[in-house]
Length: 482
Image (cartoon, rainbow, N blue to C red; front, side):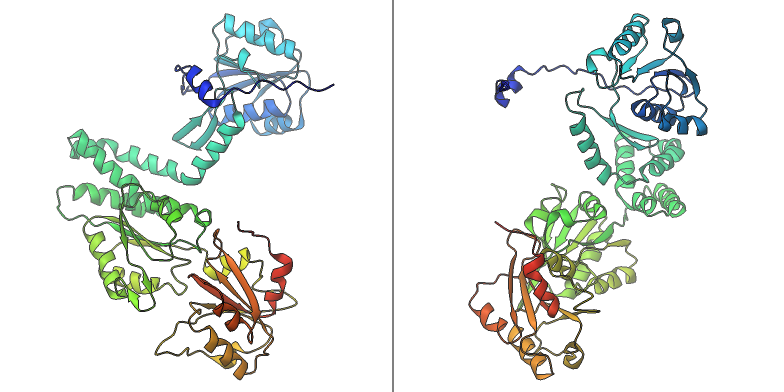
């Protein structure tokens, strides 16, 4: 028998017919020391009991059979467990009721009794019998966020919760507690509500918040107090975030990198930062390009260092985006030296370096028991028309050599390695724009690769990997571009 498919209704028509009112009004209830009833003793009931316990409720459980999870909760929590069949008189004077049995008739009975007495009731996985529903919860107490699809798609609500969880640090609650501690003092110091709002926005999006996120609560409190004391001062110092933007794919950014990018007022970026990553920054942020490529520097490094300091001294929060990791051929150390000398607050966010990201997406392990027991990172950047490296060390066997910025000097690199003892047939790979949809991998040997690359239209950035691990590319290649 062929199952009849339901009619397909265009989304545009659904939108036109959609109700404008909310199915449920979002409301937070104080359940501390309040009597709550859960009917049912299985896994689902145990999950609801755990949530109610976190809210401080006094919980009574009625169930004929008690599952392992509920038994474990009862052993460590002060639950009132009644091992019996539910009866109407059990409803008593409860503030809230949950029915989580696998018996539909019991669930309907509990729901009807509760609603007759105007007691909020939830029947798990049956919105029609509920007067309230459990949302997906982001708990950063005392900050709590709740997300609901009104029962239409609980999975979608959980996915949205996961997205929010990723950008709300676990220490958000401590930040709220700090704000609560000084709320009245700030109110006395800053009389105008508009100015007070700006003050708190600066604390929640500036150095005070970052100190809390990094576990420096005492220093954060001192900074907040000092901010209050200099509230009439004209001098406000911002902060610089030195962020590793990774090898190119935007979803390889760290959570911290994304969070700081979205609160920075100025984005200073180089040519290795992709447009897709820039799109993740705060929409109204000023964007300043300081990219450098061979024989074409928009700003020399010393000017970039001073630019970052000047922007911070003007009170700006500055995200300095650098391709890969800022401390691996990124000159990040030079930039923070300037900031330290001038007393500018900063923090450094590591990124996935190109060697790791590009090698992984090309299916080339940088180390392997049968091929390489060590890995060396070097820069192949030409200076005075030559590449000056420790060729004897790089020509040693049983290792992987990764060369950044080596495209222009590729022929010299291959020739020098051969001259210092590397086999002519040593495998080599050149990876173009690794981890992105434009990734291209060209493999050959020290002898053949320069000629192969000469016939290709290669676009920077590129990375060169040398060693027998390159032979694994054909077997382990997993990332396919369109």
